[in-house]
Image (tube, rainbow, N blue to C red):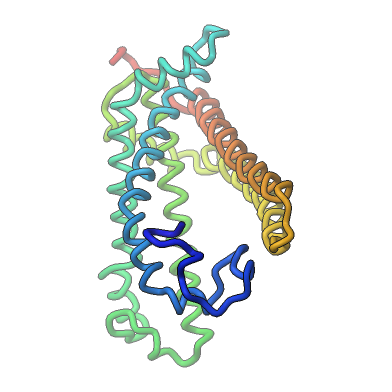
Length: 271
């Protein structure tokens, strides 16, 4: 069933089983209106699920840091749940600041400032790159824009991890002040703060690339005669990738905690 209709009831010109692995271009063209209705109907559900995932990430951040920063040993699950509840509202404020910073970054590289820079440097009115001499020149400008934007997004996400770590390490409550101090920490110690995250990113990207290649090869082989074993293997690869990302998420908080213990000075007075 797709949306409000049965696939078997939709008139089509495809052989039985030809669209089992994916919906080809002809199918998407013939049933574009139904697929658009399906996307519109699932958009709100997807947005709600995305919000729940982000809020769970806020909760789990407190759990990871409670486990890594607390001196006592044992009862890891109990400490994880306690840390998630203890720091939730502080980390929720960091999440809001992160979204605001990402919105500002998007405006800088997608909105008026970037278009004004293009108009000043290349005479490209409203960001229209057709005025450039060649397509390669336009592509280089676009690659530069996307590359700097991606680096900015990555830096903001790392900033959020270090800000949450500082709040938990010093047991303070001001997310804004902790965020400003974290930017100062980046300026004072850029290599020591960012190097562990770069190494973890390279590790994660390499493993996920290998899993993705394996899953892509299995998906291309799906056909009418495909057995359940292939589908179970695809499910195992997907769940393994999710588990890996969760573990590496904890590894990033562990790295942030270790670096912060070395570089973040203790408070003169408890908050």
